[in-house]
Image 1 (tube, rainbow, N blue to C red):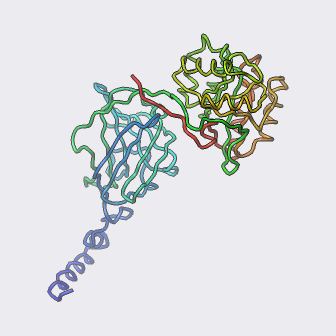
Image 2 (cartoon, helix red, strand yellow):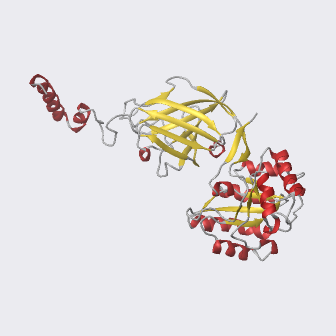
Length: 398
């Protein structure tokens, strides 16, 4: 550095030193109070889109934002709050729903708060989410809108961010800088799945602590109660349904899919070693009632041969049996059902239970404790399609 440039810089730092550490930080381009990032992050770009079941929210900032230092449920009226939030308001409504990044589980959950017209947080909570950082200055969050209490509707949206300001200072920013943008959250429905094709499986991969809970012989008068338990526990189920039981229970079938579950083919009349008409008939009825094309078939009683596997495969469905069977159809008692499942489940297990075909009160009574115990042991719950590494396909409608 030339002498003529050194002297002013040294003089500036000396003067800053006389004023104290905060002035030194400001002179060096850092934060004027402890804890503030050396370089303030401002919003550069934001995006909001719908991808299948999920809402995808992305932000790009001028400097990296440490997720663990952001507040998932901030009071944005406080200058010191650190946050990045997506704000959505219904057209013509008052207040705003805010989805905020950050917190101790920042990569797996987002904060949710309802804010009134004066900016006061009215209700607070959180929702499951996947939050990724594709690059140092970009964050992408995806979540199911219903988990954040967002219903299909027309919304206005904006992004709010602040790295935390000193008292009396203004460093919060928003995109757009004034007003908001229009977005329509459309209803979606499951329309199919990947992974269908000839083959027989009894379990998923053994290298992940995940299991699939499956239910046979419905839909029945018990199915809504099973769905209530699954919804309360935040767990998806895979229901292998019998065609003759479906008429009059179309709403229950659609509810299975709306909750993130899956429907599989279990023949028209619960016939062992079924032919084409039995398998194709149930598949056609599932599609007619729900718009969902199943990619899984389960043979009644697990009875299978090469012809059954080939027939199901020709209809785009993989044949699925199980590796955990509590024989709940025999009504051994809720305690016995629970003990068999938790005692034999292992990573990748497909658990057989029944929601139809008889009195299923014992299975229903055992289900909450089964879920709680396996979850406490570190297991995740997935549909069979997800357990096998494939996807449920969703499409907007309306």
